[in-house]
Image 1 (cartoon, rainbow, N blue to C red):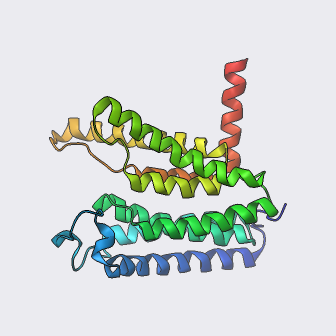
Image 2: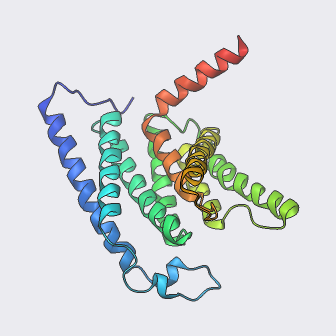
Image 3: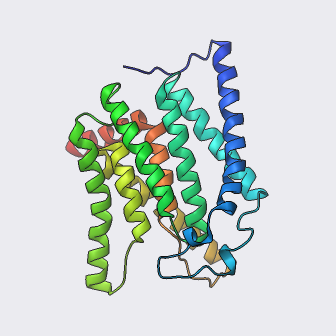
Length: 258
């Protein structure tokens, strides 16, 4: 095993924990700057021209920025707590940062820039190779990286095909499809399906929240939301809580099999 959780009896660990949290907050602040600086065309579909919404200042670092910084600090610190002084911690920081940018972009403009997906794919490949050569937490065989990517993106492509065939409309954005190829390379086969299932669960919880909110506020707004942020949340959860999730799955299997 090439990693170990941090020792809370060691003062040095708390210092590193604080440093990582501060770096995460600063990185998140500059992430907002980055999202305002990228070309407007990145935030449009291929056949669209930029409109006023993606020109000029797109994100303001106020309440949402503070919340994003706090969440990213928790994620980064969680990576250090789970994996200690190892490259896993750095990889989780990088993956979490790219997923944060994707969440902000998809959440506001329902678009996942290809440039972010490419960056995620590069980091995912590095993470998969490192995991294979060291801890094998997610990747047990080299082909698991390729098969995980194919299953991740392929599953959403299949959903799209069925949706077009039955409902005559696209079921998933192709940004989600491309992102799942990269996510699949991180987790490999068959864990990529656990990530997809977690995404659906997180999305379901959010839908329940929207339904309750609509009942009490009499909000007539159409409940449409992008799926990308839920994939991002599920990915982070599976990175940080892989052992706990495996335990829950084992308990469930034991329960249904008697």
